[in-house]
Amino acid sequence: MTKVLIDCDPGIDDAMALALAAGAPGIELVAITTVGGNVDLSLTTANALALREFLDLGDIPVTPGSAGALLHRTVRAGDIHGDTGLGGAVLPAPLLAVSEGHAVDRIIDTLRAAPGEITLVAIGPLTNIALAVRREPRIVEWARDLVIMGGSFTRGNHNPAAEFNMLADPEAAAIVFEAGWTVKMLGLDVTLTAVVTSAVLDRMRPLGRLAELLVPAAQFYGAVTDLAGPAIHDACAVAYVMDPSLVTMVPAVVNVEVIGEYTRGMTVVDFRLRERRANALVATGLDAGRFWDVVLGAYVRLAERLG
Ligand code: BDR
Ligand code: CA
Image 1 (cartoon, helix red, strand yellow):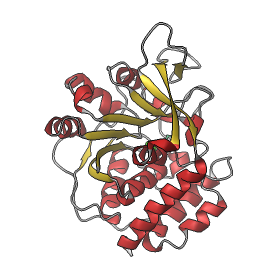
Image 2: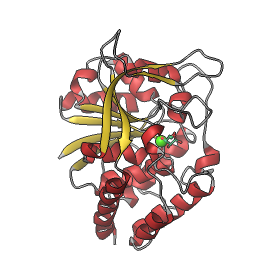
Image 3: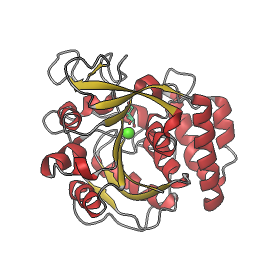
Image 4: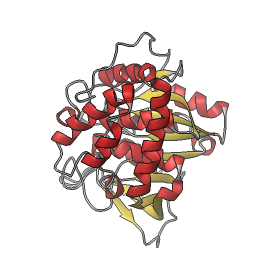
């Protein structure tokens, strides 16, 4: 069993990633922390609370964190994820409240309590992770792994240069890449191939209650993208934890541009490794066919539990 803490900004694809973690046979989700990102922190937290109960995650802590970026103005993606952040999906109001404290402390305390055991999966802006690493640098050694959805070595999505999670807090991303661990980076280069095609959507429709989340969320997401369907970026990070052989990873030095007028938030990925040792393993390929078998297998397993 891999113990996982997910730091997220749900977010349609964050919701699909949480559903994947909930259904994954080899993952024990130990905590959820939230960050302002796709929508405001109040909404990402409300969505995480609703998802915890909808996905039958028991009473694992949901702890809110940073509302905005470390230094600069807030960037949001409500046009992609809808006003609530969950597109067309409407979940029952949750009964349980948030946990006491701040996400940064939750991250530090969870890792301190189980050194070498917890994999951090960060699928929103990296504000909480950067603050945690500044406050307690030993989390770099305590984390079993840090897997992020973010960046790219070929393109942006929020603008031509920058991927959303990086653009939303470039300084935080720079801190995280410079912290001393080997960041597992799943960027747009691979996540844009994880597309909910109409054939995939057809495989989601019979999933009972779970389909009430997946189908309207995917349909909303699909309607605002120009691909053959929505790319569920964040689920790629969880799928990588489930089965690393789904993804080709290549060592690289990743720097985050924090100054450029047109390139702020861009991840500059150097595969040549001439001047520095690698600070990241960067995803360069995804076996999309097998990805969907793994993802839908976990969704079926979860759907059987949810009814
Ligand atoms: C990333 O940005 C957000 O809109 C998604 O949730 C994902 O984490 C994709 O660029
Ligand atoms: Ca996200």
